[in-house]
Length: 89
Image 1 (cartoon, one colour):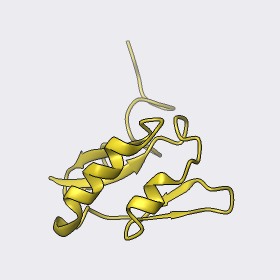
Image 2: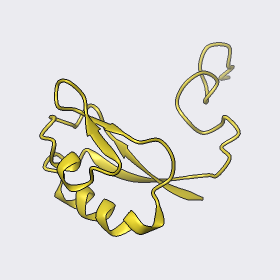
Image 3: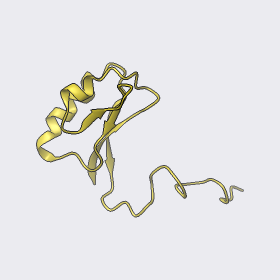
Image 4: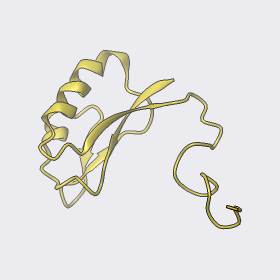
């Protein structure tokens, strides 16, 4: 299991505080919304990530545990759960 920084795009209002506190992992798009660097949180940045998560004014920044290697399961997107073609009886 590894920890990843994620943003809830619905909750985010684009304040940009995350990019100020954590420029190593967060950059802002043209409208001021965060773009998170892919991959696990580097060990040396754990404390900084927790600080940025706590400081987010809309609580849109999250730390999520993800299985290493993933194998294409458990995430959002094609084939990730019940959807088209799945039976539910």
